[in-house]
Length: 138
Image (cartoon, rainbow, N blue to C red):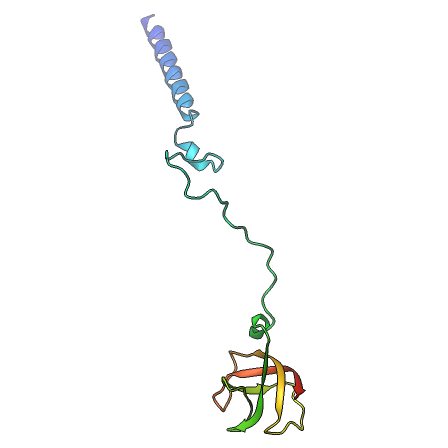
């Protein structure tokens, strides 16, 4: 009869140890680090009280690389160099392209243009390229 009592004692002991192990699992321990709502404490003040910036809704990619370049208004004299129609402003020379150029535009004509720089384009005359949006003869 001593045998059934030892079996009962061993079962009760196993049951108690199992309950103790389960209780330890639910104590929080290291699981708090996985919860993003629990902020770690370092004992130091935050570096900034300004919240981080948030990204706005994407506007989509530009239709072409020049979509993000602001048009410029320049005044100068039209000329021809290395097969290019150019604008000499006194501060620099620009190769002119675009549908707003009148076919009868002659070298020596003084003009004011509004044009969009085209940094990705290369001209045979080596000057930076402007796509003319408007042109006024002066």
